Length: 417
Image (cartoon, rainbow, N blue to C red; front, top):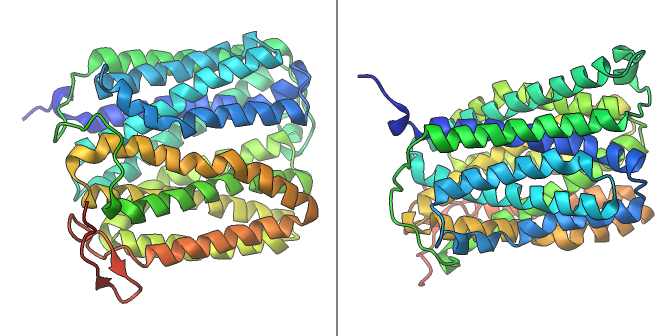
């Protein structure tokens, strides 16, 4: 029997998973150099820009109210297009105010798309095969990252006569012409918008497994999921803000070298993410999360004392690999939740995930001035707390079996609503 797009919603999830990083990686790779070289940014302006970028993530709970007006699938594609639009416009406004506006536009698109996408994945994917399918989708996103970084490298070398690729990768400083930045931002953003339009026009509206509640969902029996999401947000900030900064400040990595680390991470995940998805499906969410957090304790503790630039790069790659293990948190919730709660819970979970983004970078930035090692040891402590939480995930989670007590797995009755 020939299958059409009408009965393959996972293909749409793969399309959007590829479209998102084309804009996101383009913006993330270039924004620091662009703002410094062509908008005269100092630490003050870049700090404000990054704070503004996190605000839409904190306000992701508002997505559920947009679902009163918009179909969730259509909203995901519209907001994906908004991410592309913000990215495409970035190079045309090399002023503080202009970059603040384009960053907020792109950030609204990114965070609201991610909220809808997470909800749709839980609605459309079968619980038995969801870990493996999410691993494949993550691998597609990694392939898009590789392609995007490759095209950025090609564009930089093609429009910068005399720039030696090997010297650039090995640490040569690079100051790009403003037109190069503008062109790369534009192309990356437009490709994302075109893919969003293709998803809008080529795919039918897929039916949800259950009608979704159009309100914010906060249920006591989901408390462990909320706690895991909160701690995941804290870990993400330490990796994004401080792991990369360690590479630059302590070991002198250049933009070319950092970009190569991004590329290596993405290449590894093309192959590894689907395997991680299969592993989670085989060993279960509890074992996968325990493995992840033990690994993070080791990685963060090693960050605190590393003295080798090569070893630090290895830790950075291993740390990034653990991001694929976040699939386990998503599939844990998919198994314990009322199917009607997916949209309302996805919106609030992104807000919970971004609570720490409001204060952790600034607070740990002050701690960094006193002791960078203390920042990473704090990260190890957070990973240990996450490990304790993971011990409370049932080996076979489902509605009515959301939480167990401790490593022996003594069951706890569901919390009354």
